[in-house]
Length: 467
Image (tube, rainbow, N blue to C red; front, top):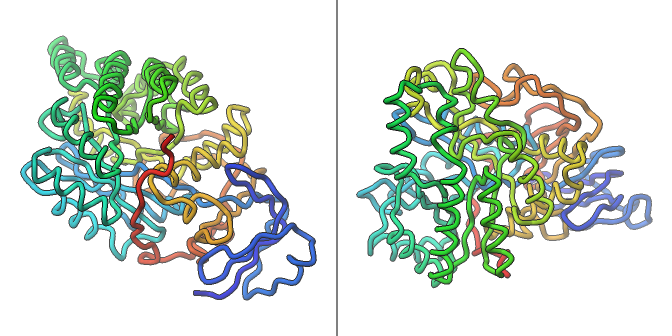
């Protein structure tokens, strides 16, 4: 550790407060805040002083939905834990929670061990794991209890992808009942995959093979239907529910209704649904394949309802679902058949900047930016106040953010290991300048000064966001 660091003169923004304060960091943790210019702050001595005058001092971003090195459709996501966590740091994110995958016929433990092996010693920021449960049986259910005890406290299930990750309603109910007992949180990919597969088959039979048909067959109504079904199954089980990558206004309405009933139901959306649309999926010359993800991009009119949901807290979290595949050689696997395009797009480096742009554009407040990108994800997945805030005792995961700097997003300048940007040419205001992870500088005035292996595995407690 590098002893004491003081960050002077910045506007410290958390989910609850904005204060002009100096921040004292010792041994990787925040030890004190004091109003800038006061005798207390002036008396602090340090080995390193960071001048944040005119800048924001914000908690490092917490991205609770990433897929590094994910096997999908005969290929792998193009970011490794090394390249992906480095890119995350460039974008002001200091903690990720990735998804370990249980394969059908294998145990949860085997899946978790495989992901630990991929990540260990390779990450430049801290990381945790959720567990994808693909094979619900009596042994799996017992294993869920053990995983919760050791800090893997959330389990993802899929109502989509029959034959790969899919669980039927009975399997989902059993897993929810188990999580109601052990304190785990079920995360749901809510799309009616059985019905979607019929529509895919019919579209291809009609010769509708272009990327835009990916969006047309994965209908908003089938996202809403699955969301409704997941909510009611969770209600029957007496379990909380977290619905991932909500993209459709009809699904937001289901979440809002359930929350109005007092249910512990939560929703996440992603930058791609807030800033992109089916217009991108329809781009010519197979360019639309760059935007194929599931749930799919929706027509533009859905964006306003997603922003509204973020303001009313019917949606609580913005994560990326970062799952990059290169256009050349990976997305191209689906030329002539949209169903073979690997699902996913890059975004781990763009999230904090895009959400700051949303502040500039008037969609959300500065504190809400920090709430949906840092504090609530940390609370939702049992990492608060170690992560997600700037307060004494918290890990010194701190970003010095220049709110006035302008940038243009581009594959030429980003650090994700993928050959395109989903936001190519987008002009945004606000940029990360310096990033500390547990007090260590990972990005120093726009230079990478971190190292693979600095990031450590972070066990999590159970959800801290329940009613």
